[in-house]
Image (cartoon, rainbow, N blue to C red; front, top):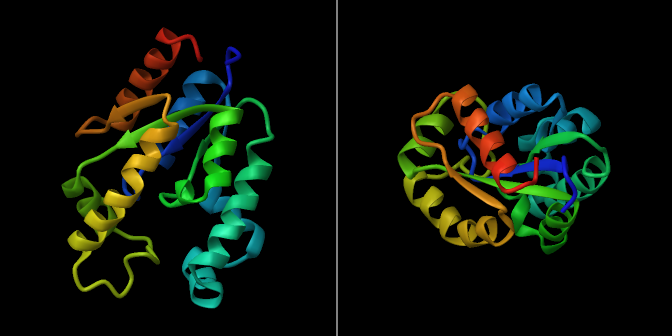
Amino acid sequence: MAANPNIYLVGPMGAGKTTVGRRIAELKGMHFLDSDHEVEKRTGVDIAFIFDMEGEEGFRKREREMIAELSEQPNTVMATGGGAVLEDATRDLLSARGVVVYLETSLEQQIARTRKGSARPILSGSDDVEATLTRLMEIRDPLYRSIADVVVKTGDRQARRLAREIVEQLESIGTA
């Protein structure tokens, strides 16, 4: 892999991909993009609306196309949506175009972080958020791991510290 590749953050909702990604971009002097935000910006509606109108399949198609487009940009750190790894084509693309960092987080942290604020279409209507998040991780964790060049447990660390640790790990394996 070439030095200074793009950096792609994968992991479950609530892992801190956007916050940590911004910090990594600052440290490395790179551009930051969030694939979910870019889908919303392009469509003019939020992801929950896309799920309502087109279902998960429609959203995944938009997400796949957006990641394909954004991953062509050089010198970029990109936070992906939690389910981006469900698409074979997206996993292949991320692996081929940069270094993939899996932000692994505990179920407790996910519950605490997803409880705050923004709508999460996958969780809407769930009577048992814990069971839903557990089921999602059973499916997604092996996919995150299958493309990860680096796996980082988020723990209780602040985003700045976590970003520094990730940059140090990437430098130690010669990818940043």
